Image 1 (cartoon, rainbow, N blue to C red):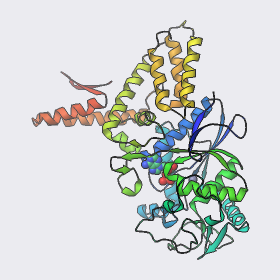
Image 2 (image 1 turned 180 degrees about the horizontal axis):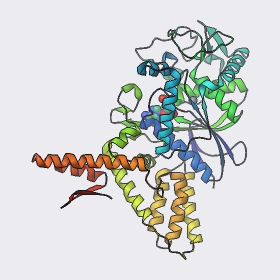
Image 3 (image 1 turned 90 degrees about the horizontal axis):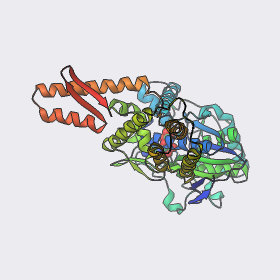
Image 4 (image 1 turned 30 degrees about the vertical axis):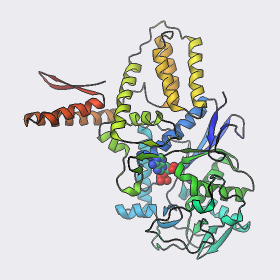
Length: 469
Ligand code: AMP
Ligand code: ZN
């Protein structure tokens, strides 16, 4: 079945064609590991995981690479401000490498809890310094770069089409330079970007390497080009990230990779829209942000959040609130229960014909620009179909869950379960206390708060018991 997918580069839905038959070379921009990932970042990683699993479902072999940014990503994407990693290290009184290790592991744990498959090849940016130096040298030799104030810059005026990923005019595409960071006066053109830093106003940059241009460190954009070229070769099929990566990060990646290679580099660009709070984009610079740990603390299961993400299309912005998550949590609980209640008789034969029909519908939903809400509906259609016996239903839902990743058959992870039970018991104790104080309004609101998450309280002679619906 032909996959149709929206391509940011052409701004239209296209038929997906790979460079090599049956093989997809896929690159994902990974996290900057200076803090916990927020659930907005994780929306992007969930949708990229779905993309990889959809491609596999549709019969491709996926060679996927993701970087871990542990150097070079400054506070502003316009290459000004302090290195985010150094900021993290100062905040926690640790070294940059300790911070990188800690938050890489935290990210890995988040991925596990959200059923996000860890990509086959994950590469820390600090492991490919020689590759970046070679890239930067070639760009200088070819006349695309210049040295100013000690740094090496890419000269965007050397390209006929710098804004290939966007249809905006140059003046609209200047990255918001925040008040707190100074504009870089070394740049010949405002959107020139740093390939290699040797001079930064932050003298205490911890990680530095020798280079032909002096001791310094790579710019953020060169990392993704260097890693992708090293591990996936000169022709990339699909490159992914959140929409904020389109400019300047991905635009700069295209500029430097194609100038280096002398030919087109990547055919399809897949971008996930943002997760927003009611106040705007969820971001770490706001100070307050929601993490997977916070969701668990509030009594939600990470996979209910995954379901919440799947209920909307990756190209639509998604607004997050706990009230909205309640709906997903309760739908998730009901779905798990229905699926886990399926029991196949010993002699049940699979209904091969009907299975094919359902699989086709599911593959169609994925092929329709990764329509995850339609793909979810396919699970409900299986449950409702009277022509399918239980064995066939189990077979199909397992098959679909290899893409959806909702853990519909997996036993709830003990660790998550323990945390949920602890949360419910704490709420039961609070409610008991409210009743003792004759604060019945509070007692009722606690009961309702749990009910919204699908947790029903029952008062019995032995105390309060609960049931998860
Ligand atoms: P970072 O760790 O900041 O480099 O971001 C990791 C990924 O999360 C990138 O692909 C970003 O585009 C993406 N991202 C950042 N903020 C959001 C958000 N609010 N919603 C969805 N994705 C986001
Ligand atoms: Zn990147």
